[in-house]
Image (cartoon, rainbow, N blue to C red):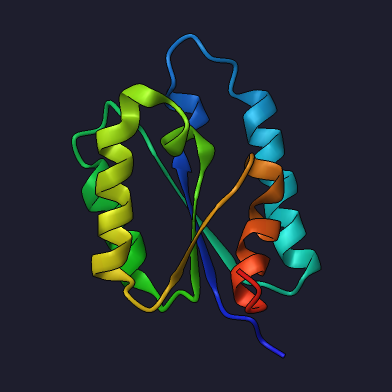
Length: 123
């Protein structure tokens, strides 16, 4: 049974100043592997806050495919100075992927679990 395609939105760890991206990149790889373990096709859209096109990049990703679920990562959600950006992201999802469930992960490793809560209808 196909559960639908998932889009994971997050911050690009290689574009965060003063940050070692490797642990986050490794967690993202583990998270993407978990989608594969469940037979779920998952796309990744990572944006940089210093990129004036972050919103356009997200819109392009949302518009590129029909998604059953969009997972918004903790890097976007949890850092209080990004509250307005988080609000924009939620509203971009609502506008450009209106049929997609919206899920939130705890970290890059459990994005598949976050999506599965909604893909299996228990969210």
